[in-house]
Length: 460
Image (cartoon, rainbow, N blue to C red; front, side, top):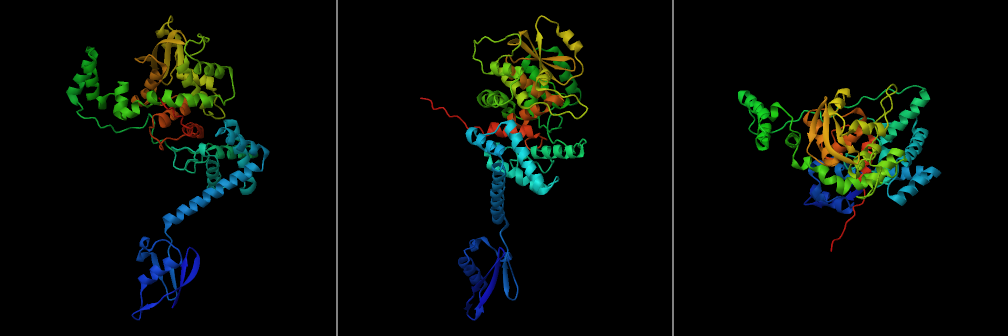
């Protein structure tokens, strides 16, 4: 007997023999998989089959088929992007730069996005579907693997994120649409952050004092200088107050998270940040920071106007992640101006009280006190016209304390520093990864830094 079999939209005929005058379905099952070179019979169950009088339909295995389809889509998307770029002389320059350097500069990325969006509009109109936008975004990271963001689900969300309709491709499409309408585009609805300093976290701290015992412990803090006793009482009253920055931050997260900036910056982030900053358009301020960040101890710099090597490398990150646009009516803030919202230099000969009196309401910032910028004597965190002394004697430790202050006191950062702060939170400290709303710039820089080749040094 011949049985018509349909599998993956293909039909075949399989000869079925009788056993003791009857047709054995399991025998047919084994024969079908052996003759049709399909998956192993052991991977199928009786529920995978439905039969009629003349046809047996084998339902596909979704997981395997999905993997095949995903691979085909990825290859197709990669070929699409490569074809589009090779069709333009400026696109060839993009491919050549990636082949030479292993990545692409911001200016080259903008050129690539413009080419691809123009092609997208020509073929799919000014409002292409999400599927089309995702196809182009997928093709980009398939063709340029070092641009893939390892911290996001699909890796290409900085080019197009379907959940929020954000990304470089969306930005360019909106710019083109705005020019056509000769008006201003309406801002998209922003999803609510599920993380960050303002997010209320559950902390499991044992032996918390309540009532009179708590009030007594908090009162005793004002009358003791014993550090061990202070730490103990601050821990026991954590649920009722949050003021001991390092300890409270560790209670919110853990020791490993608390130490990530100090452990990772010098070894990994600092050299790669300097490397990426060299690709930026040079300005006088950027050149001074670069010169200081790359200087060796003992090199004479303009000590009055230039921070030391460590501080300069941290401030370069602001130039890589400049302030986001504030809207049509908001003044544009440069990276140089944003630096002043993060760290302020104060000469040691001047009054700190006078400095605080002259400050308007601002988010927490770092106050560096010294004779000159290159020789800071002490650091303070300025907040609500109060100063919190930093025990750290180096800029990295002071920045670590400043970052933790936002979480301990549930304070958001300055709007001009949102990209800088989000990068530290998700990429350096690994806090709320996948929960925070990240700009394409943050994801793009993370992809570039984390896809850098690791240099291994063999010690004798």
